[in-house]
Length: 404
Ligand code: PEP
Ligand code: MN
Image (cartoon, rainbow, N blue to C red; front, side):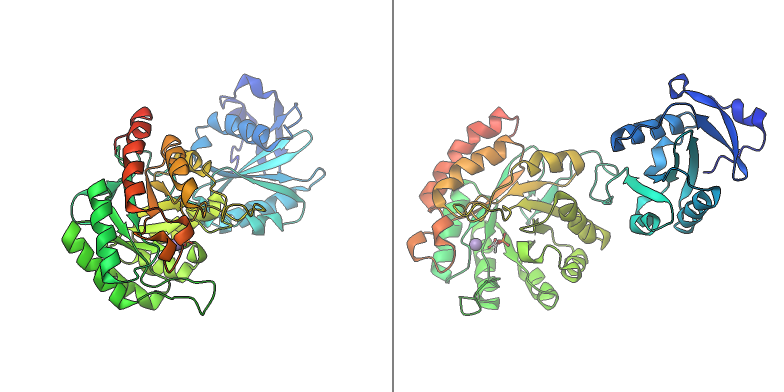
């Protein structure tokens, strides 16, 4: 909102925080504006705090979405131009004139805000966004953690209980899949993973069993009660896979396949969204935002390692994102220590670290005979190792106030 105070008397009757150092009022471009004797803070955070303090005097700080900092020497028409742009975006404006700088606070719904358009306006020095651009995935709209049900037997991810999904990288044949499913189920897993359609770097590598793989997964669910988790790689596959799967997995290579995110968002199946191998936290949550915005709020995030200069491990498991996501979002986040490291011997220690730092669960590659696995044998643990890991995780979960 602009300072639409029409008289000086009206203006000075506004309660203003004494720490602001208001020098007086100035008639600025058709409105009264507060003039500050102090220099405006230079750091973004200082500036934001300053503007919030100013707005809180008129109970407006809630809706602040961006602070636009004008260049020194800007003319009223430059400020008016920014105000016009903001209003065209459906936002409200609040002009604050300092002795050295003028800033415009933008208020309203950040989803309508186009930062780059404002930055292009003449005499704009910078735009400081206040709120993250994701909304439905953020804690602003939902403070309590989301609990996502998976499968038909009451299993969940995101509650007080830590949940494990386990199984081979790919469904290779019926026998190995059923053997693995029984073993991980007995060890306490809640979900069965297994790729039927595989995203392979090399077009000549095994591409998965396709629909036959889905049938085998469905049979394993019938026999064990485990929720079936499998990857969907393209929009035309969504309908077929949703018929067999309990959870639709979006792989790292597809995290920004926006059409696919939209398509799985139109189903009622929970979506396991893996972090893009070079995605930032913001891009990750914006991908989740696509799914939720399409109508499906059952999103489970998954950290699976990112590409760095390190070659010793397949990916660098960036566990710091777990508490960071917990701070920014209500969505559950699980960790994939298999793709996150590429080495079977690193799976157990990184699984413990993941649970210790607040992950809601794990997705682990388990193979009855890793040496002979058609895909990802080097990072697959055996059913016996998985059983041991489950037992060891118990103590870690309890230590951080969770159950398993
Ligand atoms: C997988 O889980 O089998 C897989 C291909 O994972 P990612 O997409 O994380 O590489
Ligand atoms: Mn794999």
